[in-house]
Image (tube, rainbow, N blue to C red; front, side, top):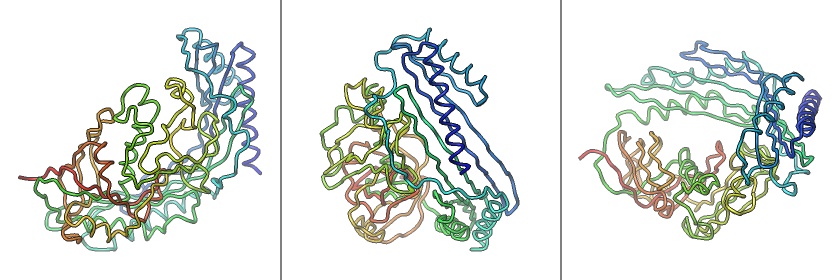
Length: 444
């Protein structure tokens, strides 16, 4: 009941600032407001390092006088502060240049009716429980093996909150959500070699988090597996991106087909709509209404109703990712991507993890990527990597201090298999990705 009251109060505040903007002569206006409560606990070597409690809220308002836009925001939610924010936004609009593409999304796209996506599962924000979970994770990791010699810490986070968006079309929508996570990072040492790795769990429902013991053990296992890493020779080899990081490949793809990159002519996939950009067996479907999923949302940041979209079918690009502004700039229709993507489901080829290794034969299994060597304008890709050398479908030894390189256009087209076990802790749900060939820079 308290949540419903808070949501009603926030909706009322948004309604009031929109009315105030209209009263001050704005032809159109939009406002969003959020309120989040949360705790963040971190420990190191089973001692408490930090305990934070947040109780944040903020409101942002954009007003339009014809094609002139002014924006302001405030963390002070008192009546006087809200009035001042609207006044300042109106003042700013007087000094901005006219932009024919600005304004709220079209009225017919609003999510006037939307489903409950089961995103809100509140629990008491219990600091002591958070501390216990973090310590248990560290303890489980440190007890795994004598080679686990240090901890880089564990952390527990819990956030519950709500957000509301409204505009001058008469649309006001809002919903509550929750998010919980636990992570652990440990350091291992053997024969002078030191390595570190981590594990984490995240969910809308706190009772569906992996146990603290499992998180700790996984962090230790991953770290131990990396000890005594070697360098390998420079070569062109197949590369298997483990599911944890395979999502990053499609993350670059997201950037390349986002409206903002396209209208700025800063994407390697310019003019690619309706063309083949992935292998002809590969489909990507966006499913914004998956119950309790981490990237589910009934509407985007502009109130546009989200919908299932076949982003890629049989390797062909069907949709760019458009907001109201980028859609107008490109002369296309807004498809609800203000704020990002909503649960991409990437088709797999039915391969188990072991089958992917067999398919690769000899090559590099990548479990960590480093650096920012990705150019979305040209598609050039070069990143530091660590992982495991594989021969005859079997892992031989850990590898570090190598670089993998290529061009994203070719890398994406050269995907030959995707594992059946998906990464579910991301807005992109896909399995491990096998690329037929990349340049590996090592020694020699």
